[in-house]
Image 1 (cartoon, one colour):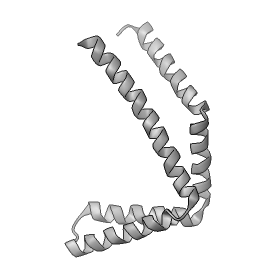
Image 2 (cartoon, helix red, strand yellow):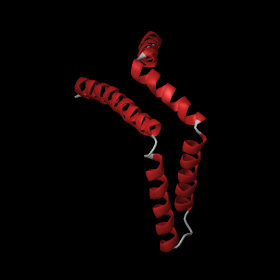
Image 3 (tube, rainbow, N blue to C red):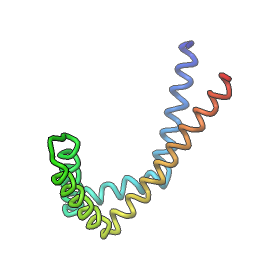
Length: 116
């Protein structure tokens, strides 16, 4: 690949990243993320869920232990879902994930069409 083309691609990607960073959806995501980090209860629930998930992944547990951890995870998730802030964050996160998937699919489709 020519150095000029590499630089042009890099510049276009940087422009896309800047567009996303300036978008209201991304700004909302950052604001909600910061509010969540400041909420000790939400963060404790998230940390507890992650800890239990790691215990399951690491293995060496009986089926009963795994079932108990999975049930505890469900309880913690239900508690998280009682916080509107968390639900708003998840909603915006899903929208952003959809945007990123659209970008990826658009690029993939473009190059698939050019190389076929």
